[in-house]
Length: 508
Image 1 (cartoon, rainbow, N blue to C red):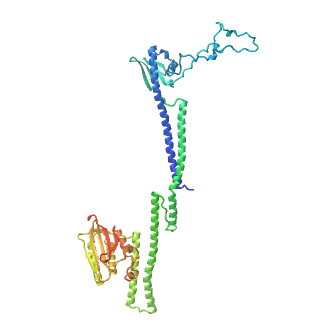
Image 2: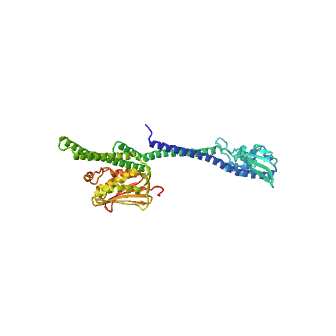
Image 3: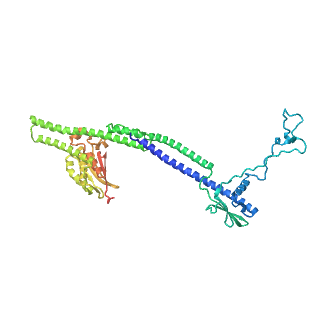
């Protein structure tokens, strides 16, 4: 079984906690040991000052250190006396009252002893012996009250060793001075490790407690990491189910939004993607149905015309051939438009961008449509800009856009109306608008005009030769040039198409 993301996250968290706690426990134990040794060295520095004072006093009394030479036990006794461990001048505690013969009285007489006979030792005369307490005993002084051991050395004024090693090495040094004259030097080598077993036990106990605490924290962190990993990855499990449903074609599946973190954002993006896929699928099905319908109409007309000619119902004259030719042209126009959209969607349309004078291009296009507009009873007006408008674009593709816009206005504007094409500069963009008079587009249908095969009036639009793909092609071509196109209500009562294209860097 492959490891899950929750397992990997939990293990990563546990490893990090173990490393952190292990490092912390090791550093803490080392610091405790070093700190304890530093504390002992500081304490022994104070004891060294006491030893210095004792030796200074003894030197004043004795006049030299000969009494101490080779006899460190004498120094230990002086230190013990100073600390109150022994009292050489004090007797042992007095005997108890029942131990003295005066208070204790004669021993009890046995039954076999004749009356009147007593132990002469207990006679009341002055010659009877007295009982004394046992001889006084001393408690032995400690071997090394301050725990200096061989680390302490004393040298006299001539540098000769009195006690300790002759060459002690670096350490704490105290000079013993008498009336400004150095009579001896005390040297104490610092501790490098914990000497006493009790102190070692204390430090080890502290380290043991730290390790137990670290182990408990590791266990607690492991449980918490597993819980957090499962809780954090619940949205991923939901996302996995949604993506599996989408992969099976169930595009209406949506992921629940849990929390407000990055996983919630990911779930929102997945839902947006699912909605886009669902919309695209609906549009694809609708487009297939519309394309089938659009192709069926001219094919049905062509089939009916041919069958009528075969059956002799119609005569194969010029009128019949013109009707067939018109349907073939309509079918060819639809196929060409579909091919253009397919190339635009696949990104296979090639553009040859160059610097062009947009005003000159629009004026030439409107001149080409002016005769047809007059025949349809429409007035075509071009309002040029007040300055030169130079853009970088594909002149052929842009001419196709202008041609489609003018063609739509010419085809769907009622006779007696007008078509106005105007060009102006708005900041860093050139704005081209093509607007016409009535009839207009119902409110809310302006955005739908760029959908493929959409028609406001299906029958009327088809009868005028529209395929329903012209504005979709215009949108793809304009966006490929870095511009935008929108449909708005015209002040003339009809429709206004507004195209915005970026100006060239020189014009900016």
